[in-house]
Length: 300
Image (tube, one colour):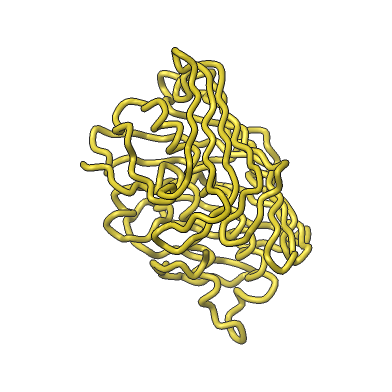
């Protein structure tokens, strides 16, 4: 299949789940639906944080694959998010280490109208990025998307823990602090295991996201409303590229995600058992609602 305008490995793995969830929750009736108020605020902010930060990692992963293709993909992935960016690649001779800098300058607008500024910087060491034992780190300098600013101290550390029985498996440890145009801030810490299950056909790939063993949460932080929260992935999230293409809604087809906030309040997102459809359930305070995901950008 021709690989054109691929939004990237993780746009389907991690980004889209949260866009969908945010779109879902913002469509609820705030006067009668129990999924509202502080539940809505908590889930929406968690969604927004993950959309912004995972999208940056997705861009970085694509550029690692362009710099040193991992096998099946062509080296020239057409990522229109970078159409006006300046990209500097500095791999060493055997590509066991190196760096990539993506410079969006003072304003770089993609085809969807998203405006990025500043730099995303990737460095790797310990071997080719897709081989076991290698590590890469993603950092930022003046980076923002749609005027949501990343801290220059933000970082994502990714370790390749692949084995013959579990290829293309990575640990992800990240710390982010974002600032919105209204000067509100939010923090996010991540502890994930991400596995890319490849098939002979690009469209049949699957991606599994689980909580790092031993970690107290898959994610935690403080949102824009000054509420602390944590996230558990109680059943690993499975993404199907074929379902994403056929349904045009990028959400998991399996898995359960639980957000806890204000110490003991929870909202549970259950994506089902593998059926390729656009529905999932949201539960909180004894109430459960089956929802159909929307294919729009209302959660951006």
